[in-house]
Image (cartoon, rainbow, N blue to C red; front, side, top):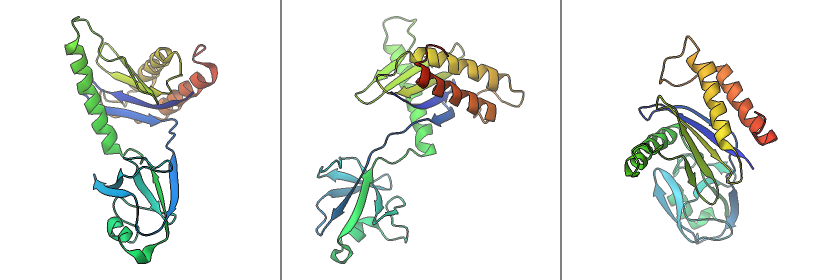
Length: 217
């Protein structure tokens, strides 16, 4: 069991804090000969797998490295285009590493804004006007838990589906927020949180929750 990440979103839908605690992003590296048998495409300035799943390589995986050298978007470190490089027989055989890339800061901001909108839609779709909005989203690999405060601030925890009692952790994170952000005279409401004491106490709450099953935090 594990807690993957924490997001805090202000009442306007802006991301004011994000922390990655544990990320399990499997990577697959294989040796290929020419012709390159996996169909690739450029998407969002990254080279991704479009067709040809094999040996753990999945559609949507991104090219992370070639011959042990990390790539930079759709280009090699020397500036050459990856698609053109893989189309040249003289560059083979070669090793290509595939996997899911880490989210960029801009992507995290965009996802936070999208969830804020989905939360509002969920509240409006409810037949009960007092709906709390989205509290849990479940997939086969993770659960997203959300707690919205009376002032509209959302605390989101993404965790292993088997991790129990996340509601208690969410309340603890809210306590950390009130004690080390709201009571900080240098903090401006709804602005990004940059405070070492906040960071350390939030991380401590997450680590303790994993060790003790959250029952004692």
